[in-house]
Image (cartoon, rainbow over all chains, first blue to last red; front, side, top):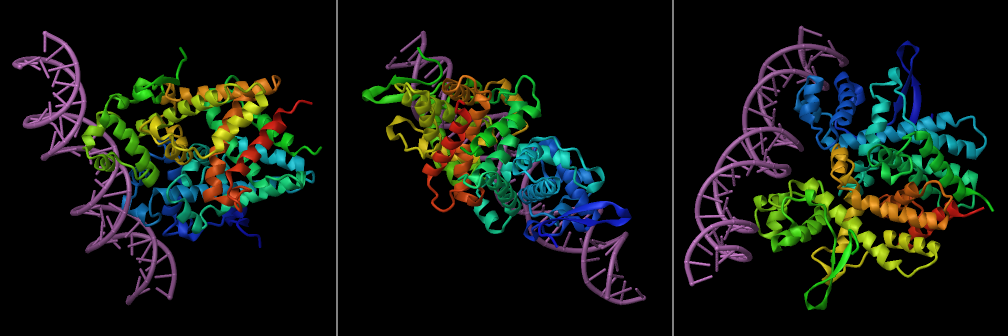
Length: 237
Length: 237
DNA sequence: TATTTATGATAGCTTTACTATTATTTTAAA
DNA sequence: TTTAAAATAATAGTAAAGCTATCATAAATA
């Protein structure tokens, strides 16, 4: 049995991905009922559409066709819901990485794959789950840092809410060390890759003069930049 | 006459730094009155203490000893105030950089100075202004990205609210090009340095396992990491 | 069939985010 | 110095956000 992200079979032979979630993130497990799944599904859509600041449980309830109080039975507040979605995302990304780099021997090729995964627009896995991964990816780019950039970081961190992010970071850090065991900053480089894959994407779209990709607006350029950055650092003398 | 950040003499021979602010950021210029200056001063303190989410104009008014309506005469809402503070900060940083790298010939030394400035805890300039630069620096680390991570980015960007950030980024990009005129990603590397100087600091304090500095928690290590990252990228073959 | 459990419907309360009105004070022009 | 203009304080009020509580009903389970 694998820890955290694990794949399990669902009815009708569909491969259903199950991300193991921290129970302290919710009041009632949203994956355990239709309403819960609807909360996840519609919150992704609504946050994507309205932005996290304008997103409210009332609007979400209207979208779903339930009541505000109904949502509150699942999540304490919208911050917890965002942290839940972020944790789900990090878990999902780590699964994608371990899955997609499974057979790759060369750690440098592995790391390139990781960079590509992080900086690429995700296609929705359609049948995989009630969560639209493509929208979620975009949400995390624009709203993800708000999950930890609060006065609650320390408390949330004590409750392990950011464990999936840390595990992802550790996993990437290990690939980095495989590339160059003497490299001194594997974790920081990993978090830099992750954050910059997202921020450079955001900047390219909305504040292009903070990047060098404003003209073409191609994600392939962000990937090229990150590869350049990372492999110059890891090059052995 | 220099554009944007300029130094001007104040009464009693004190050197008073004047950051040129975008007029669309405020309703009434906060630098033009005592109340306005108090709004800036106390908002920095209150955001630092309570965090941006819990920060309200009502609490700010109580702190200052004025009324909520009084604050609204200066700023449309707390988002605009945050953008104002961020713009002030970027302007101030650009001034610091141009001032502190003024006599340096070697662009590599210049760039090192820039990295040091961005990743260092700022000491408050005390007499310089009603804004506590040290607190503001900490605010920007924790809240700064919220200035642009909103559904308003495009509108705000059209109104040039992020010009100081862009100018800073361009200035650092130019130093990068002085180091290596063939480097392909000067802007993106500049925004990476800026963001990572802040994020790695935040992570080191609150989510240390996302970094390699958790044990010592020394900013000098962040500086060393960023130097390593940047100069490996800029090294000429 | 009885009973637990989840949901829906409704109400209500506090805080946030904001606007408007009038009185009063300060500043600056005549 | 008077007078008018501008800024501030005091107060009130509204709509929405953020949350809790209650009770009836429907669905799942024992």
